[in-house]
Image 1 (cartoon, helix red, strand yellow):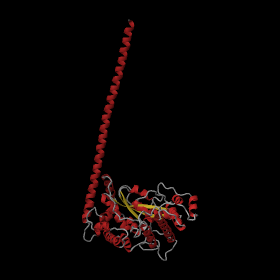
Image 2 (spheres, helix red, strand yellow):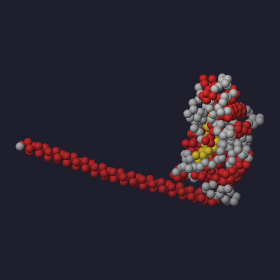
Image 3 (cartoon, helix red, strand yellow):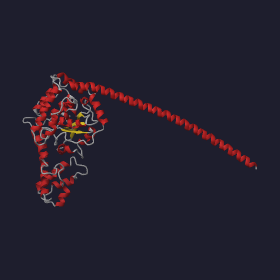
Length: 460
């Protein structure tokens, strides 16, 4: 990718708060460590908690801010498992731009998709080498979203009128909301034919209840409560903030809004974010609406799914999601696509211990994890990381050696058991062969006796 993208707010990187710039500058400075980055991240967490009220984040943010940072179970410790390139890309919002090429060497700096952890999803437009929308297209997107909102309002009015008739404008708005939905239709719903769409568009608004029921449906993302469109309003406001006065209106942005999440199995969850998704995760409705609107505009969206942290304890699944949400500024009320408090999921069916053990082994073998820990220890003015340093480098090495020895012993025992079983089987096969031979000999003897008996009785 060449030199790092400048940590400056611009027309191509329009949503970059001052704390994100500070974090990127720390990552760029070889004299700074993740301990310095952590101080900025905590300020970002307080900023997310205090400067927006749409999504309550007090519980998880306060829990993170009051953790025992010397514990290897802390979010501070988990931060060190993130490669600097990934950390910087997430805080800059340039995930799709920097990781769109699956064959690029940058992927060597990313955790695998196997196992539990937290992830980040960026969006690009196909054919633009990871770049997002232009300012002109962002204006058009806002108009499309406002049209969708009008369709939601038309449906709400129809419900309030006990499914009465729609006027011409309401019918028009609801029709276009339906067409936006049909860009990524949910499973079981078939998009209307072009003839039907043409008929709807040309309607005079004087339709019967039966006509309407066959032609329209509740907008997919309207929800069911009276505050059902709050998230869409926030999405529109977020894109309006991305418009910079004086920027080139036709230059694609290299920054896109991010969606953050977590899962017991990253590889499986990745499938939920394909542009043609029909069954999406409950936290991703604004993401799917955005993909639908981009397709409605005649563009082809491309998702870029990047693992952020891996978990070797159940609690780290949520911790990674909280950390990525803060670093990526990913709440829709800030600059992203998330609509729920991060890290609030219950994990009633966590992965098996063996899965966490494999993940722990993977993380501990990442060179960048050890480099991040060492650098934080070296740069620490009061040595608060020495305990973690000792725990990581003594316990980890010993743990890996022990696990390797246990695996080798298990392989040896297994091979010995197989060999013993094969020897026993060979012995049984030899006994069987001998029994078969004895049986054949006995059969032959009986035939000889029978023939002799027949010969004797024949003489009488």
